Image (cartoon, rainbow, N blue to C red):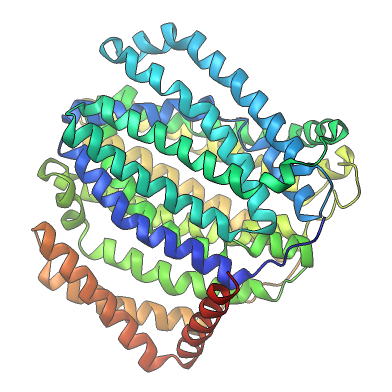
Length: 493
């Protein structure tokens, strides 16, 4: 196999640009949904998004190792990984269908059985997307950005067809997501078609399954920790879930900045380029900090875009914005941690060495997270938030970010003990200053109409960029490098 060059900045830019475009498509999709279904139905959708991950917990187990094998140019790794993960996904889908008679009455979903049946298709699609994105990230990460764009645009078009035109309400939501996932899968298959012609290597599966013991251990810990989110509908009902579901997509936009470092992990893994970690940190924080500042300044304005009934959930959005910043930092240091770990550099995945490595400590963090959050949340929700849906969401999410911050500090310590990633404090200070000025302008105007919110947000972005370019020479150079790299990448394509 010919080794493909990984263009870190170009791939990050493509992915980030795709994410920014999907901000628009995401807003359009969310508006279509929020204004076409009842608050109860919106909560039903949120409940699905909490339940389904319990059946996709294995979706990233094998792809973790598949990506590492593909990055190291192992013959047949792509085909073997896709077939293996598809088989696991099919089994998970069957388990989900078998458990529907138990799930439906537990969450009071008797009137939505057909919807949750449609959602079964999403499970196997998620398994396929996970492994195909892993294969592409290892050698051609920019195609993951293109795939994201294809899927999101199709989702909006389908949502308009099913929800606005055909008036299928919540069924239209489920159908548009499921079909859009399928289109994304087809696109990814086309991108890896050449690699799929290679021979399947069954011996790889044995090594991946052995190594995946640790991934499963980590994933199981994540699902235990996610019980905290199940507490939201259990203690606060569908109203509490709707507050979380309304705020989460807005806060998630902040995490899009982390995709500027999307190619950092395979770059370090394949080429050991540690010097790019600090540059990635600068680039990511240049966008993440002002995005968070904008949410802090006018949280209710963003929620009013969806529907006036969600305006009171502004504390939930602020908490989730802090969570998004932590997730963004975690993703960068996670890329470094996974990239520098060399225990599987040989053909086999050494079980004992992995058990003694920094990877195992990282994989154990969700259990520590659960020890902190679950007892605390249960106590607070049962004693101080009964029959108060908004408080249920606030307490659960505030407890979550407290533990998440603690886990990030542990992760930072793991990276720091192995390599030094210099934190660009001077640059961060400039980002914070420019963001503060921008946030002050947003706060003063504090729009309440949808079109004014978009206009004022755009003006705020221009103010931030203008101030940053005026006070930060490195930012000016960085933006020039970005433009040069983007033109170079487009010319190559």
